[in-house]
Length: 224
Image 1 (cartoon, rainbow, N blue to C red):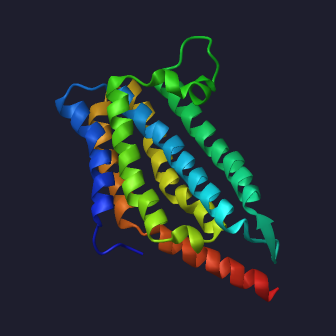
Image 2: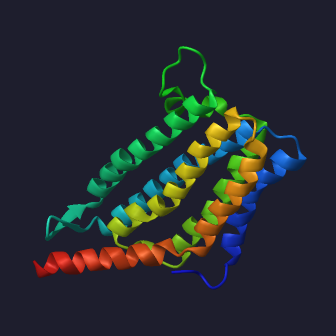
């Protein structure tokens, strides 16, 4: 399912994705710092998803959970805790592989140092890039979520799994990119894979695909 055209908020996210490329190629920014931003983007998406789920939980309190051929009613906090645990594992694996491959963690700091100390890696250039991503995601995802009243109708399970399609592409970009950094090819790599990441994020309609998948899952569960 491809999108026919981009919205104005999606253009904001497009610019956010291009800022690290522009900085690396024309402003002398570090390629390692650019990939740190792509790694931290995972956490940004996770935080915004949790915030959305909290809004839904305080509005509707509970929602349907299809599993094992049954549909049960679960508290919104159940969805939130499940997401924090499951998505947290994804983020932990991604940031650990990235930080170890790129060699950015201090000697003797442990494999998971980056995940638990990500804020210590933020400098001025990284702050600019992260700020652009935060603005882009708020414009593209969070503001429409509130203004259009999506929080009143969107199933929590759909909301919970929305980040995963994008994260798979992002993990590939960050992890493979960290390996290219060790070969001194990070500048070329960031251009190629930023364009691939943009194409997948902005032209593939993950939300429609996910909605159809969840609808089919619910239908199959109710028929058993």
